[in-house]
Image (cartoon, rainbow, N blue to C red; front, side, top):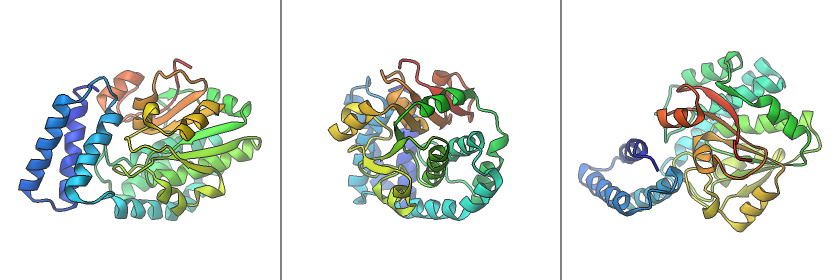
Length: 286
């Protein structure tokens, strides 16, 4: 974990405290617990793994396992309502659908504040005109063309609706692929769970599995044996979001592709892309 991650982690304490209307005394006590944990934790871990422990402290203090539940539901419903307009604008042009799917990674309550609805909608409609800050999309499509098993690692609520549409389009172009969509094993911030996948109808286009863990991203050593087996056997892995990039970058997996918006200076430095750039990046150690 990098020291630069502390600010975002502490900010999440403030966000949840405000969301559940925690009083200042309780918030102060929670921050002390988080500080005590950070002083003794293994800093060689990735931030997604460390954030899992911080999130556990937060939810125990507020006695709510999923404080963002109602907001996640709202974003899923908003995106479902916007989907027909997005589909009408981009059709099944894979390059355009891919850009919109990556742009939807904007919906991230761990790295971004809540955004105005119209701001999100217009950003998504404009996404096909954006340039990818790093573009390995041709390699991605070539890999999917030769693949049988595709594992798609989800990230955020709302965004999952566009994930479903991207998977639908990929299956239209590459009908031989069998797609598995992975969600978090339990709620953390606004990351997708089985409930979100069920709500937006993901099972229509993919088999759904839990990764068995509550990290803010995919941390392989913390995931279930069933997930690790699926990951190992996948011919292609698409990993959405910064958390999955932080947890998996550099792992020894062939045909692993990261799709995300770079929302912080540290991730931009690692990926060698500008802040707020949308990225399709092939893993460098496959």
